[in-house]
Structure formats: C-alpha cells, structure tokens
Image (cartoon, rainbow, N blue to C red; front, side, top):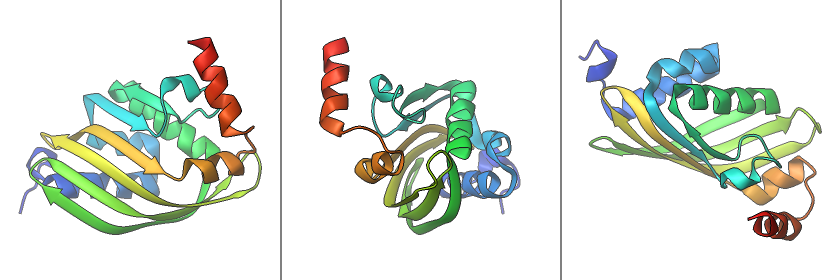
Amino acid sequence: MPTKIQELPAKDVVQHFFAALRSSGPDAALEFVGDDAVFIAVLGDDFRKYLPMYGKYVGKKGARDFLHSLSESFDTQEFITQKVISEGNSVALWGKFHHIVRSTGRDFHSDWALVCEVKDGKIEHYQFYEDTAALEAAFHLPGRAERVAAVADAS
C-alpha cells in the first residue's frame, strides 16, 4: 500500500484532491497540485470578466486563485462523482452537482466532466467541463451571443 503522495495511483491523487477540497477547503487541496499545474475552466481568459472562474490558471498560485473563486462564488449543495476512469497518469471523471450562486441565490445544476493528468503524485493538468448556459443563467449574465461578440470585438 503506497504511503507517500508520490506513490499514489493517479486516480487516488484526484480523489484525495476532491476530499481535501470538500473537508478542508482550497488551501488543503493544493497539497495535490503541482507547482507548474495548468487548470482550465470551461471558457478562455477573455470571458473571465464575465465570470471569475473562466479561463486558464497556471501554477499553484493560479490553482489557488481558481479554487478560491469557486468557494467564493458557490455554496455547494451536492457534488457527486458517478464514474472515474484511470489509465497511467490520466484520469477522467464525471458526475453531477448542485450549487447555489452566492451573488444571486439562484440554483445551478449541471452534469460535469473532468480530465486530469498526474505526475509524481500531483495534478499537473486539470480541465473541467460543465453546462455553461446553466451557469451563466444562474449568474444572471447577459446573453451569450452578446458576450461572444464583445470578446471578438475586443480582440
């Protein structure tokens, strides 16, 4: 039985990450994040002005910023992992969740999927997928077409 984090199977590292996040919060979960990790949350950086969790976050500080934006934005009611598949250093998970958006009080229900790469017991790549239309509705954001056009015009 592995005792050091570096010896844990990739699947276990990701599951320990989520367990630490749930029980102790974002800073505790960083124990399972690599120094040069890349966290990608749904849409590109150009959309971060609409929602703070959108975009790419690099390094442990980036992962911390991302995780704190989630805890500041959501009151998690339910987060269920339905399936975990692991091969070597790659892990894919999916499930469903229910959050309440703190700023609006609205419910956000979604299926989700996550793809991770783990190296030496640390998450090095984290890419999360969810129902962005439901997310944006829960935040009362203006229509997606207007936001996409605004981002395109700014480029």
